[in-house]
Image 1 (cartoon, helix red, strand yellow):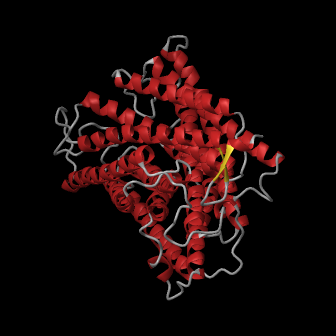
Image 2 (image 1 turned 90 degrees about the vertical axis):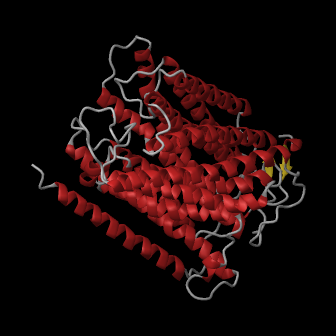
Image 3 (image 1 turned 135 degrees about the vertical axis):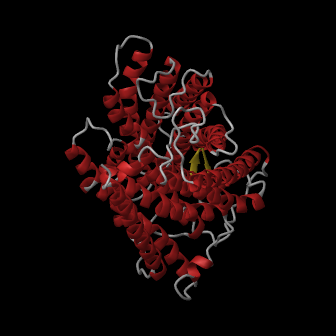
Length: 561
């Protein structure tokens, strides 16, 4: 193992394997590019749903909807997650990367696959949307690109696991792996299930698209496909929770209240989180009621328990760290005096709040079999997953980027004032998107229809005026989110290309933690988190109230004959 293959990070004291550093850079840059592409398509979709603007014709709307889903839900997220996996293994464990050539081949496969699918979509004959349900048939290149992307991502995950083995054998760390790495392991295990499921269903669908298979059963396709389509979000949850712990440690030196409890919560994700995929199948008559009830009640609640544990331990760790700094007055001085001007912290904490209050509560509601019938095929569904994938995962990834650019790219953030405001602008936009789409869905607005005014239909249906208001506010929120996303992309690209080189330790606003705090955890000895207890209590009250409001909505449907 050549010593020149490493550099020592002046901020954390961690040894960074240069091949791992290059791969982190490549995957992160690719992720940002696909975020730009997918974000532009998403903005065009929102402006088309706004009846007063109605930007795109029908064929372009479904093309944009397909491209938006693929580029942001798969490409942006998974490229960035691969970068997180390499950081959590090679960098945090002071280890060399296993099989760098395989890692570069994986990156190339993912890039080629993403390009092939995008080309197929842009040609105009593959507007099957993200779900791509048969009998809708896309070009063969659409499915082949997805297969190549999935295989490349699986290879990257294999490199991650190989790196863990090398670090263990070469004893590059002491004791158990850090909690952030443990969270990344959770994401990687779920990724194997997710990506393998995608390959299992997409290979026969590809053969169907070229005429070698006569028929793809739609119900079978949905059942297996959602093991990828929804479980990919479970990769995101595990990854962005790991990022929460990482940012809290790097910015504040925060330690989890109990490492054992946090690790148990991640274990619950591995065992039960994928079962949430069932909520996409609750309206399918071909699936037994027993299967639906089990997946949406007893088993899913254990996955929800995992998220609720993190929902207390993460802000609890922040509160404990802040109180150790002397912010002990009242319930919330620790929160008021938090480093809100640090974009990494701001992005992380708003991701935590929005993911819990908007994504978590709406997810449990959608995962209830009876209530699901009210909202599954309405705009409520994309409103929910914008709260999880965008307000949760994307905002957390944006936050950690402001630490990754100086630490890995060794460049200063070029526009610090823009960086300070960017998480707030983006959070405001995505919170509005989620709330107003869920509001429109509650009023019955369909999730996949190009024109809710039904202007060219023989039979018309008139939605209440409030539905049009919701779609207008959704459009304005999408513009705000696009501005926030644009601020992030411009700043990151400018910093990477033109930012001043970092040769001295990074100065974090809130008293930097000891070297490598993120790589070495320990539970807090004395815990006093009254502020976190109040915040969690507010969450539970909001959850109970909203849950029973939806049962009231359901009761209003029952008298129908």
